[in-house]
Figure 1: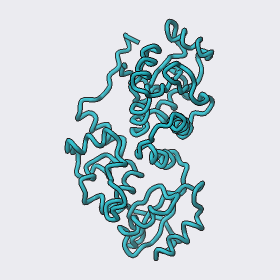
Figure 2 (figure 1 turned 90 degrees about the vertical axis):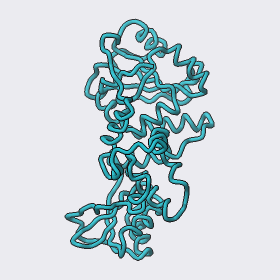
Figure 3 (figure 1 turned 120 degrees about the horizontal axis):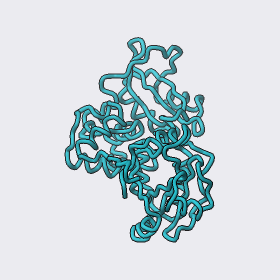
Figure 4 (figure 1 turned 135 degrees about the vertical axis):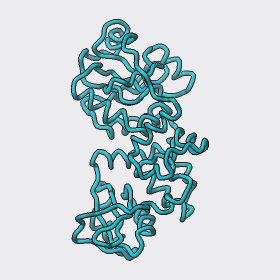
Length: 310
Protein backbone atom coordinates (compact mmCIF):
# COMPACT_ATOMS: atom_id res chain seq x y z
CA UNK A 1 0.00 0.00 0.00
CA UNK A 2 1.00 3.59 -0.55
CA UNK A 3 0.22 6.53 1.67
CA UNK A 4 -1.19 9.14 -0.68
CA UNK A 5 -3.66 11.08 1.37
CA UNK A 6 -2.04 14.48 0.93
CA UNK A 7 -4.54 14.85 -1.87
CA UNK A 8 -7.82 15.82 -0.25
CA UNK A 9 -9.73 13.80 -2.85
CA UNK A 10 -8.46 10.61 -1.19
CA UNK A 11 -9.28 11.45 2.40
CA UNK A 12 -7.14 9.80 5.07
CA UNK A 13 -7.36 6.23 3.79
CA UNK A 14 -4.16 4.34 2.97
CA UNK A 15 -4.81 2.98 -0.51
CA UNK A 16 -3.48 0.05 -2.48
CA UNK A 17 -2.61 1.14 -6.01
CA UNK A 18 -2.12 -2.19 -7.79
CA UNK A 19 -5.25 -4.06 -8.89
CA UNK A 20 -3.66 -7.51 -8.99
CA UNK A 21 -1.99 -6.99 -5.62
CA UNK A 22 -5.37 -6.00 -4.17
CA UNK A 23 -6.94 -9.23 -5.47
CA UNK A 24 -4.14 -11.24 -3.86
CA UNK A 25 -4.52 -9.39 -0.55
CA UNK A 26 -8.27 -9.95 -0.67
CA UNK A 27 -7.79 -13.68 -1.13
CA UNK A 28 -5.15 -13.91 1.60
CA UNK A 29 -7.13 -11.86 4.13
CA UNK A 30 -10.68 -12.89 3.15
CA UNK A 31 -11.51 -9.19 3.04
CA UNK A 32 -13.55 -7.63 0.22
CA UNK A 33 -12.02 -4.91 -1.93
CA UNK A 34 -13.32 -1.36 -1.74
CA UNK A 35 -12.37 0.02 -5.16
CA UNK A 36 -12.50 3.79 -5.60
CA UNK A 37 -12.36 5.33 -9.06
CA UNK A 38 -11.41 8.93 -8.35
CA UNK A 39 -10.23 12.00 -10.23
CA UNK A 40 -6.95 13.28 -8.74
CA UNK A 41 -6.51 16.22 -8.79
CA UNK A 42 -10.25 16.53 -9.04
CA UNK A 43 -13.26 18.80 -9.16
CA UNK A 44 -15.06 20.12 -6.11
CA UNK A 45 -17.28 17.02 -5.96
CA UNK A 46 -14.17 14.83 -5.84
CA UNK A 47 -12.51 17.00 -3.21
CA UNK A 48 -15.63 17.08 -1.04
CA UNK A 49 -15.97 13.32 -1.29
CA UNK A 50 -12.48 12.87 0.11
CA UNK A 51 -13.11 15.36 2.89
CA UNK A 52 -16.57 14.12 3.88
CA UNK A 53 -16.76 10.41 3.04
CA UNK A 54 -13.13 9.36 3.43
CA UNK A 55 -11.69 11.39 6.33
CA UNK A 56 -13.77 10.80 9.48
CA UNK A 57 -11.43 8.69 11.68
CA UNK A 58 -13.82 5.83 12.42
CA UNK A 59 -14.86 5.62 8.76
CA UNK A 60 -11.20 5.37 7.79
CA UNK A 61 -10.69 2.63 10.37
CA UNK A 62 -13.69 0.72 9.06
CA UNK A 63 -12.41 0.89 5.49
CA UNK A 64 -8.86 -0.09 6.36
CA UNK A 65 -9.77 -2.84 8.83
CA UNK A 66 -12.63 -4.55 7.00
CA UNK A 67 -11.68 -3.97 3.35
CA UNK A 68 -8.71 -3.89 1.01
CA UNK A 69 -8.84 -0.23 -0.12
CA UNK A 70 -7.88 0.15 -3.78
CA UNK A 71 -7.54 3.43 -5.64
CA UNK A 72 -7.70 3.77 -9.41
CA UNK A 73 -7.32 7.21 -10.97
CA UNK A 74 -9.90 7.93 -13.63
CA UNK A 75 -7.82 10.68 -15.20
CA UNK A 76 -4.46 9.00 -15.81
CA UNK A 77 -2.96 6.83 -18.52
CA UNK A 78 -1.15 3.53 -17.99
CA UNK A 79 -2.41 0.82 -15.66
CA UNK A 80 -5.10 3.07 -14.23
CA UNK A 81 -6.64 3.46 -17.69
CA UNK A 82 -6.49 -0.31 -18.21
CA UNK A 83 -8.49 -0.98 -15.04
CA UNK A 84 -10.87 1.86 -15.86
CA UNK A 85 -11.60 0.22 -19.20
CA UNK A 86 -11.96 -3.20 -17.57
CA UNK A 87 -14.87 -1.87 -15.50
CA UNK A 88 -16.23 0.19 -18.37
CA UNK A 89 -16.02 3.38 -16.36
CA UNK A 90 -15.67 6.78 -18.06
CA UNK A 91 -12.58 8.93 -17.64
CA UNK A 92 -12.70 12.24 -15.78
CA UNK A 93 -15.74 11.13 -13.81
CA UNK A 94 -16.99 11.86 -10.30
CA UNK A 95 -16.21 9.24 -7.60
CA UNK A 96 -17.47 5.71 -8.18
CA UNK A 97 -17.02 2.89 -5.64
CA UNK A 98 -17.12 -0.87 -6.27
CA UNK A 99 -17.17 -3.67 -3.69
CA UNK A 100 -15.39 -6.73 -5.05
CA UNK A 101 -14.47 -10.25 -3.97
CA UNK A 102 -11.05 -11.82 -4.45
CA UNK A 103 -11.93 -12.63 -8.08
CA UNK A 104 -12.80 -9.04 -8.91
CA UNK A 105 -16.53 -9.76 -8.98
CA UNK A 106 -19.05 -7.27 -7.59
CA UNK A 107 -20.59 -8.23 -4.25
CA UNK A 108 -23.20 -5.47 -4.26
CA UNK A 109 -24.11 -2.86 -6.86
CA UNK A 110 -21.60 -0.05 -7.35
CA UNK A 111 -22.04 3.31 -5.65
CA UNK A 112 -22.31 6.20 -8.10
CA UNK A 113 -24.08 9.55 -8.34
CA UNK A 114 -24.42 9.58 -4.57
CA UNK A 115 -21.60 11.20 -2.62
CA UNK A 116 -23.05 11.08 0.88
CA UNK A 117 -20.88 9.50 3.61
CA UNK A 118 -23.98 7.65 4.77
CA UNK A 119 -24.45 6.16 1.30
CA UNK A 120 -20.90 4.81 1.37
CA UNK A 121 -21.44 3.50 4.90
CA UNK A 122 -24.65 1.75 3.83
CA UNK A 123 -22.87 -0.02 0.96
CA UNK A 124 -20.05 -1.08 3.27
CA UNK A 125 -22.51 -2.60 5.74
CA UNK A 126 -24.48 -4.36 3.00
CA UNK A 127 -21.25 -5.84 1.63
CA UNK A 128 -20.16 -7.18 5.01
CA UNK A 129 -23.63 -8.60 5.72
CA UNK A 130 -23.81 -10.29 2.33
CA UNK A 131 -20.46 -11.95 3.04
CA UNK A 132 -21.64 -13.09 6.47
CA UNK A 133 -19.03 -11.00 8.26
CA UNK A 134 -19.34 -9.96 11.89
CA UNK A 135 -19.62 -6.18 12.10
CA UNK A 136 -17.64 -4.66 15.00
CA UNK A 137 -19.60 -2.45 17.39
CA UNK A 138 -17.57 0.66 16.60
CA UNK A 139 -18.69 0.31 12.97
CA UNK A 140 -22.31 -0.26 13.95
CA UNK A 141 -22.40 2.97 15.94
CA UNK A 142 -20.47 4.86 13.25
CA UNK A 143 -23.82 5.47 11.59
CA UNK A 144 -24.87 7.56 14.62
CA UNK A 145 -21.82 9.78 14.31
CA UNK A 146 -22.25 10.24 10.57
CA UNK A 147 -25.84 11.34 11.16
CA UNK A 148 -24.69 13.79 13.84
CA UNK A 149 -21.81 15.15 11.77
CA UNK A 150 -23.71 15.57 8.53
CA UNK A 151 -26.98 16.94 9.88
CA UNK A 152 -29.25 13.90 9.65
CA UNK A 153 -30.63 14.57 13.14
CA UNK A 154 -32.59 16.95 15.32
CA UNK A 155 -31.61 18.44 18.66
CA UNK A 156 -33.68 19.08 21.78
CA UNK A 157 -33.03 19.87 25.45
CA UNK A 158 -34.56 18.65 28.72
CA UNK A 159 -34.32 20.05 32.22
CA UNK A 160 -33.32 17.35 34.68
CA UNK A 161 -32.89 17.16 38.47
CA UNK A 162 -29.42 15.78 37.77
CA UNK A 163 -27.99 16.09 34.29
CA UNK A 164 -25.44 13.33 34.87
CA UNK A 165 -28.14 10.72 35.46
CA UNK A 166 -30.23 12.45 32.79
CA UNK A 167 -27.60 11.65 30.18
CA UNK A 168 -27.52 7.97 31.03
CA UNK A 169 -31.30 7.71 31.03
CA UNK A 170 -31.96 9.51 27.75
CA UNK A 171 -29.30 7.65 25.76
CA UNK A 172 -31.27 4.45 26.39
CA UNK A 173 -34.17 5.64 24.24
CA UNK A 174 -34.07 4.08 20.78
CA UNK A 175 -33.26 6.74 18.21
CA UNK A 176 -31.17 8.91 20.54
CA UNK A 177 -27.75 9.45 18.96
CA UNK A 178 -25.92 11.29 21.74
CA UNK A 179 -26.42 13.14 25.02
CA UNK A 180 -24.52 15.94 26.73
CA UNK A 181 -24.81 17.64 30.12
CA UNK A 182 -25.07 21.42 30.19
CA UNK A 183 -26.75 24.54 31.49
CA UNK A 184 -29.50 26.91 30.34
CA UNK A 185 -30.33 29.89 32.58
CA UNK A 186 -28.86 28.14 35.62
CA UNK A 187 -30.84 24.94 35.04
CA UNK A 188 -29.24 21.53 34.63
CA UNK A 189 -30.18 20.29 31.18
CA UNK A 190 -29.34 17.46 28.81
CA UNK A 191 -28.78 18.18 25.14
CA UNK A 192 -30.10 15.33 22.99
CA UNK A 193 -29.33 14.63 19.34
CA UNK A 194 -31.82 12.17 17.91
CA UNK A 195 -32.67 10.41 14.66
CA UNK A 196 -36.07 11.59 13.43
CA UNK A 197 -36.37 8.48 11.25
CA UNK A 198 -36.40 6.34 14.39
CA UNK A 199 -38.10 8.48 17.05
CA UNK A 200 -40.23 11.62 16.77
CA UNK A 201 -40.25 14.56 19.15
CA UNK A 202 -43.55 13.57 20.77
CA UNK A 203 -42.26 10.08 21.58
CA UNK A 204 -39.04 11.50 22.96
CA UNK A 205 -40.91 14.06 25.07
CA UNK A 206 -43.10 11.29 26.52
CA UNK A 207 -40.05 9.18 27.36
CA UNK A 208 -38.32 12.15 29.02
CA UNK A 209 -41.42 13.02 31.04
CA UNK A 210 -41.70 9.43 32.22
CA UNK A 211 -38.11 9.71 33.46
CA UNK A 212 -38.98 12.83 35.46
CA UNK A 213 -37.52 15.37 33.02
CA UNK A 214 -39.11 18.55 31.66
CA UNK A 215 -39.42 20.13 28.24
CA UNK A 216 -37.83 23.55 27.87
CA UNK A 217 -39.53 26.37 26.01
CA UNK A 218 -36.47 28.64 25.85
CA UNK A 219 -33.32 26.77 24.79
CA UNK A 220 -31.13 29.78 24.05
CA UNK A 221 -27.68 30.23 25.58
CA UNK A 222 -26.94 26.56 26.12
CA UNK A 223 -23.55 26.02 27.75
CA UNK A 224 -21.89 22.62 28.01
CA UNK A 225 -20.92 21.52 31.53
CA UNK A 226 -17.24 21.35 32.45
CA UNK A 227 -17.67 17.63 33.13
CA UNK A 228 -20.02 16.29 30.43
CA UNK A 229 -20.53 12.53 30.46
CA UNK A 230 -19.66 12.50 34.18
CA UNK A 231 -19.01 8.76 34.47
CA UNK A 232 -16.77 8.82 31.41
CA UNK A 233 -15.02 11.92 32.79
CA UNK A 234 -13.95 9.91 35.84
CA UNK A 235 -12.76 6.86 33.89
CA UNK A 236 -9.64 5.72 32.04
CA UNK A 237 -11.47 6.41 28.76
CA UNK A 238 -11.40 10.18 29.30
CA UNK A 239 -7.90 10.46 27.80
CA UNK A 240 -9.01 8.94 24.47
CA UNK A 241 -10.24 10.78 21.38
CA UNK A 242 -13.88 9.69 21.29
CA UNK A 243 -16.78 10.40 18.95
CA UNK A 244 -20.06 11.79 20.32
CA UNK A 245 -21.80 8.42 20.03
CA UNK A 246 -18.91 6.62 21.73
CA UNK A 247 -18.86 9.17 24.54
CA UNK A 248 -22.55 8.78 25.26
CA UNK A 249 -22.54 4.98 25.14
CA UNK A 250 -19.44 4.58 27.31
CA UNK A 251 -20.89 7.05 29.82
CA UNK A 252 -24.01 4.87 30.01
CA UNK A 253 -22.16 1.56 30.15
CA UNK A 254 -19.96 2.45 33.13
CA UNK A 255 -22.60 3.02 35.86
CA UNK A 256 -25.17 0.59 34.46
CA UNK A 257 -22.57 -2.10 33.68
CA UNK A 258 -24.62 -2.64 30.53
CA UNK A 259 -21.63 -3.84 28.50
CA UNK A 260 -17.85 -3.64 28.44
CA UNK A 261 -17.03 -0.12 27.18
CA UNK A 262 -14.06 -1.56 25.31
CA UNK A 263 -16.40 -3.11 22.72
CA UNK A 264 -17.29 0.29 21.22
CA UNK A 265 -13.64 1.23 20.66
CA UNK A 266 -11.89 0.84 17.32
CA UNK A 267 -8.61 -1.12 16.99
CA UNK A 268 -6.55 2.10 17.18
CA UNK A 269 -8.40 3.31 20.25
CA UNK A 270 -7.91 -0.08 21.91
CA UNK A 271 -4.21 0.10 21.19
CA UNK A 272 -3.95 3.61 22.56
CA UNK A 273 -5.71 2.73 25.81
CA UNK A 274 -3.61 -0.42 26.24
CA UNK A 275 -0.47 1.66 25.73
CA UNK A 276 -1.83 4.32 28.10
CA UNK A 277 -1.18 6.84 25.34
CA UNK A 278 -2.44 10.04 26.93
CA UNK A 279 -2.41 13.39 25.16
CA UNK A 280 -4.76 15.09 27.57
CA UNK A 281 -6.68 13.70 30.56
CA UNK A 282 -9.78 15.36 29.09
CA UNK A 283 -9.12 14.44 25.47
CA UNK A 284 -12.63 13.03 25.03
CA UNK A 285 -14.08 16.56 25.41
CA UNK A 286 -11.84 18.03 22.73
CA UNK A 287 -12.33 18.12 18.97
CA UNK A 288 -12.46 14.44 18.02
CA UNK A 289 -10.74 14.64 14.65
CA UNK A 290 -8.05 17.04 15.85
CA UNK A 291 -7.13 14.91 18.87
CA UNK A 292 -7.19 11.78 16.74
CA UNK A 293 -4.67 13.34 14.36
CA UNK A 294 -2.45 14.40 17.26
CA UNK A 295 -2.55 10.89 18.73
CA UNK A 296 -1.55 9.41 15.37
CA UNK A 297 1.31 11.88 15.17
CA UNK A 298 2.44 10.72 18.59
CA UNK A 299 2.77 7.26 17.05
CA UNK A 300 4.57 8.66 14.00
CA UNK A 301 1.77 7.38 11.79
CA UNK A 302 1.24 10.55 9.78
CA UNK A 303 1.07 9.50 6.09
CA UNK A 304 3.32 11.17 3.55
CA UNK A 305 2.86 11.65 -0.16
CA UNK A 306 5.51 11.72 -2.85
CA UNK A 307 3.93 13.33 -5.90
CA UNK A 308 6.87 12.36 -8.08
CA UNK A 309 5.95 8.66 -7.80
CA UNK A 310 2.26 9.03 -8.60
